Length: 43
Image (cartoon, rainbow, N blue to C red; front, side, top):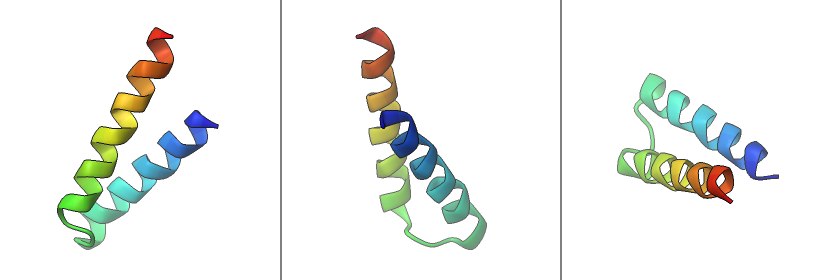
């Protein structure tokens, strides 16, 4: 399930760069996804 969330957030981040929507929120979501990935890999 965590992988699905990470993939969805990464796609939203790429779309945010493409269409300039979301602003800082997209980057915050990416950081949250990266933290979740690191926690998953370490546990």
